[in-house]
Amino acid sequence: MLQLLRRASLPQGVIKNYARSLGSVIPDTKIEDFSVVNEPILGYGKSSPERKALQQALQATAARCEEVPIVIGGKEFKTSKVVHQVMPHNHQHKLAQFYYADAKLIKQAIKTAVETQPKWDRVPLSERLKIWERAADLMATKYRQDLNAATMLGQSKTAIQAEIDSAAELIDFIRLNAYFLKECAKYQPISEDIKVTKNSMRYRGIDGFIAAVSPFNFTAIGGNLSYTPALMGNAVLWKPSDTALLSNWRIFNIMREAGVPDGVVNFVPADGPVFGDTITASPHLAGINFTGSVPTFNRLWKQVGNNIDNYINFPRLIGECGGKNFHFVHKSADVESVITSTIRSAFEYCGQKCSACSRMYVPESLWPEIKAGLQREAAKLKIGDVQDFSSFTSAVIDDKAFKRITGYIEHAKNSPNLEIIAGGTYSDSKGYYINPTIVETKDPKDRIMTEEIFGPVLTVYPYKEADLSKTMNLVHTSTKFALTGAVFGQDEEFINCALEEFKMAAGNFYINDKSTGSVVGQQPFGGGRMSGTNDKAGGPHYILRWTSPQSIKETFVPLRDVNYPYMSE
Image 1 (cartoon, rainbow, N blue to C red):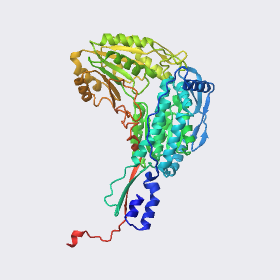
Image 2: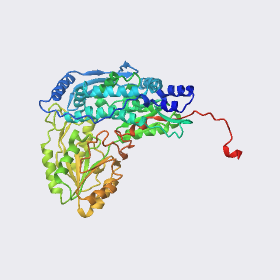
Image 3: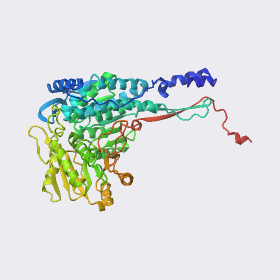
Image 4: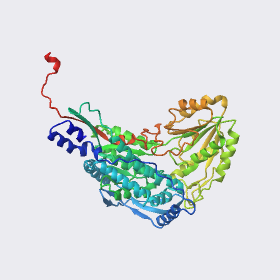
């Protein structure tokens, strides 16, 4: 661009002024080009080096109860409210001790973030991108198994589920969001005549602070919710989930080691209502980045609405709230693919993925074969300690989840319209164990088919083939959610029909594949209706939700005449 200005024979003062502005206005001149691919998922075979390293990390992590402070502006704090993270599969084993921030400390974190934000926003994009690349490298190498071990022991994920989450997906979020920002920064508005006018755009953070409220079920989501706004020039208060505390603490320290300055992201464990009440009361609230339940997100939204006259900005509310995800089977489907895909989708990580299959519609003609296959495969699943590499899945996250999920199982046992055809047993004597449960229903509108359970319970409705259209209509009219869904069939006419019929039923839609397993950069994730605001985390547009762009017009030829040319004709 400077060469263009020089060729335009503009005054040296204009060129120098423009050059000085490059670092803040259009820093893409300093950004090194790079490309990205998804992080490979390691296999953890019996004699593999990654398995040995993971086992060592598991042993070290399990050997102590790690103390985790509140961190605000680089300073550590402890309060009288002491909380422990335990292993869900062995709930007497304390893994971490941490502290709840009270309202006073949360206000201090807000003040720190608000003061830090303009300083951080002045750091050139090129420098931020280098920090994120260093962080991704640290996660992929030095700290990979520390992340996985904390996730396995603290959130009861098996080795492969942790590797998919706290290694591959987390690294992908860090690397690909940096890549998306780099690509976004390449765009500049049209300048019709560079000798006269230069138009440019820069991506600013939002003045104030962002509150990131992250869930237990994906370590990677915690990293994305807190550090993607930071990448874009924002300062963040991160409230991690109590039941993902240790893995989230690992992320926080890796990002600090990579070079994220103190105060950019503040680590603030807290009681949910206290945190929500305090952040929504601050006039500096610029946004909430949330993954969790519908009631909690609704509460935050209402509080923002009640305080709307007090804010400096209109706060941006971004939320992902789960779903009632479906598999819909056509008579032309490959039966074995249906069986294996559904078992994985419904029961991997105990059905605690946001995208897990919870309801299924099967034609009566295929039901006997599919039923037998589901029962056969469910019976093979080993449920146990995550350190046993032969376990397919482990315990649900905590006592609240255990009580909620088993309540639906008891409902199935007591309802004349429901029959448990697999599982239905549970015990919380040592860990919060619930055996994968499959229910057959005569009523497609029973609450077990319409309400989110978030656990290892799959309900199947066998439909009459003559009622295909009617049953398809049930999928998106019987529940308030619209996150993920999958259809299985080889009939092209049916697939085309399903694409239209289920257009609003799922934000992530799969054809002859399970409803889980979205990959950053491949299937950007999010749903509509009560499943969330569908901002598509893992896609190129997500970063734009966390910037306040500024358009700049610089004129090199001074205006000398008030009148327009036609006025003198």
